[in-house]
Image (tube, rainbow, N blue to C red; front, side, top):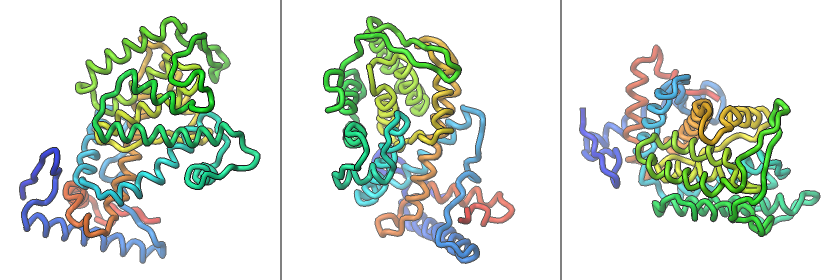
Length: 347
């Protein structure tokens, strides 16, 4: 087997002429299959069915192993050209803003969110705060992307800055400040759940960051991302914006460790599932965290699938030597399938 060169700056690319020819041959083979699938189905799109390669599993350790391998596949496409990164991030950040705000009750549609952010339009009949939430959330995404690009650490100042961006011009008196009064929610079963008293918040946040700093390089990045989200929600340190801030913190950690932004759906059934799983861990020191860890891991897997689909279809010259590990993985799996075309998902 040809060797693979692996270093932080040069991940899994073909380094010999034989490897370059091998990658070109594998790509040509699979692109031919995609073309055949599109012709046969009379549709203009066909993609790799990555669930054949990384199938569904209910075992969390197995899922983490899959995520590590999928991230390895993503690394094999690096460095990604600035133009490709921009194309991937622009639409995804709009979608993330729409979904995260809608979970919290924002009334803007996806199309309206796009128009507010990109064209500065005001949507008739929609509250001003809904417009500000869209603008603020996108600014917060840009902030965490910048931190990740700089490999800046996550600390209390970062947390408060994210929250300040979320509530900017909406609740300025509370933006970037811990709450000073008790808060509670009514759960789906009608029971009232009270969060820790305001006087406990500073100490709980201190413990939050102590745990993070002790475990951030020991725990699987996706498991830590779930912890950061779940524990922050259960401390509920802010009077408003806890959900959006927690999801941004989760994605900051994912980005810092090379994973893509992962989006939690706002559709009613999906949102109810999200809240239900969160409610299974309402204490800040106990409770079963595994259902939420599994939930987040599945969302990260979905995001990795989407990014790999996008990058593997890139026909630009810059991408010609990218994805060596990913395409080799497809090739190795296809040998074990009754028909190689089973790797192709027809639309």
